[in-house]
Amino acid sequence: MDRPHSHTYFKKAQALMPGGVNSPVRAFKAVGDEPIVVTRAKGDRLYDADGNRYIDYCMSWGPMILGHGQISVLNEIRKAIRGGTSFGTLCPNEVRLAGLITEAYPSIEQVRMVSSGTEATMSAVRVARAYTGRDKIVKFEGGYHGHSDQFLIKAGSGLTTLGTPSSPGVPAAFAATTLTLPYNDSAAARKLIAEQGREIAALIVEPVAGNIGTVLPDKGFLETLRELTAKNGIVLIFDEVITGFRLSLSGAQGYFKIKPDMTTLGKIIGGGLPVGAYGGRKDIMELVSPEGPVYQAGTLSGNPVAMAAGIATLREIGSNRQFYEDIEKKTRHLVYGLNDAAKLAGKRLTINTIASMYTPFFTATPVRDLASAMTSDTKQYARFFHLMFEKGVYLPPSQFEAHFVSMAHTVRDIDRTIHYAYEAFRKL
Ligand SMILES: *Cc1c(COP(=O)(O)O)cnc(C)c1O
Image 1 (tube, rainbow, N blue to C red):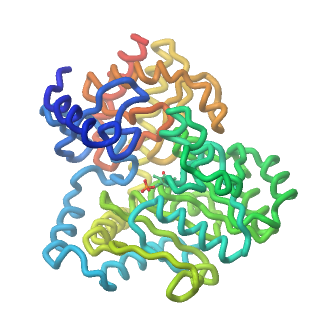
Image 2: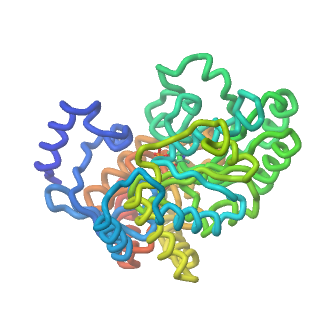
Image 3: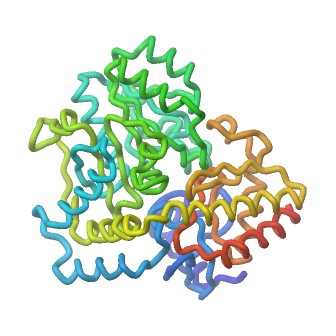
């Protein structure tokens, strides 16, 4: 496919911005293609600068659960904009969104809005450190919690793809306070906490890992983490930036029925605008300034337009009793189809899926942690990505990402995707 307009923009972008992008995986380095420049999106489709259209399974990396350009969301954004775009004061939309979040998440008694998932996780850890008076934190290998210094230790996604275990620029002293564990390894967690539990402020986990591709928690894993942290006075933080409002209205914690002490949210709660949030038990959250001494602020935090997009998205989800059933049905249809197509074509894949997220790993090994995810044949994924791309299907441009199905995905487009996947598998 010829994409002269995308090519021209990308060339200019490369001169003006590092790698030509404002977030690394967008540069397509992991799949060896040149990125498209998208000018418009609607429903389950992206449209590039050359007028090509693509069925989208990246969905802006997670926020667009209703699909692109969903009409009620656009209307609420328009309505909000008519009133002005930023006040720098408390506004009604903040109160509304905070109400919707705390109502859906019984574990979140109080919430603070920020502008990204990165800010949410970094602030949550600061509060947990203040609350416990301890410095160390625990995260899991391949777990991605945004790009703040303390989390760039064995982080997933772009970092896994690029093969950088951590990043230069992170002081060794910061890195030393972050302990890492293999995902799904309850015994390792038990051992580490037995040894260092008294020095650990927080344990942060993606209840379903999404940044090494979709990886589900083994039965009992999250329960073990809950038990160990409670016993040792460690703040359990569920990073639900992806899973919040994705797995269920009450996220992964509702899905698995586990109550964390703190939760971080992002992506879906902004409905496609920049919003993050962190919250949790009141006795922890009341440490946050100005109620308490832990400083955290933001010029555009609680922005009225961004809040409106989030409110409209959550209301749209909440107004449909069948929402999660329907979107899971679509996803299952796609994943069964992909599995069948792979079998017919004689390809061995491991497709992990839950609710409306999935990842086809190009490995026959079950994928349950970073090490097993890394057994994937990334060259095959790149070839698969390319073949699908040429047919007008836009998959995340890296093996180690979650693929997302939205409410706007049509059965026709999903069937078409399965058909193209079959053709692609046969060519691999
Ligand atoms: C995307 C993501 C983040 C970071 O959110 P940004 O809005 O990109 O800063 C944090 N945690 C998880 C689990 C994520 O998927």
